[in-house]
Amino acid sequence: MTYQEAYEKLTVLVEEIENEEIALDELPAKIRQAGELITFCQDRLRLVETDYQESIERLPKR
View 1 (tube, rainbow, N blue to C red):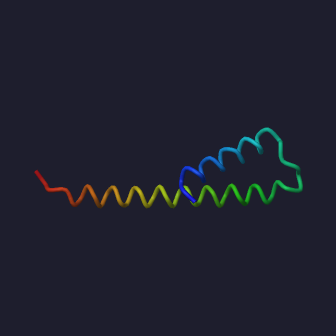
View 2: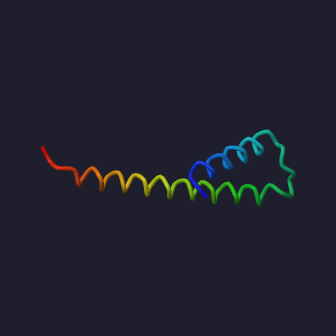
């Protein structure tokens, strides 16, 4: 899954939860899924940030 796919799924889930479109019995599973998507997105962002910092550090100093 890509960051964009996870973010889009998370956005849909949040909208469904906020608009009370999810049955009460399904809510715990949807909240768990949202948490997993949040963790995935955070991990991807950390990875990109680390890669960015390492790339910057490798640039020749002026």
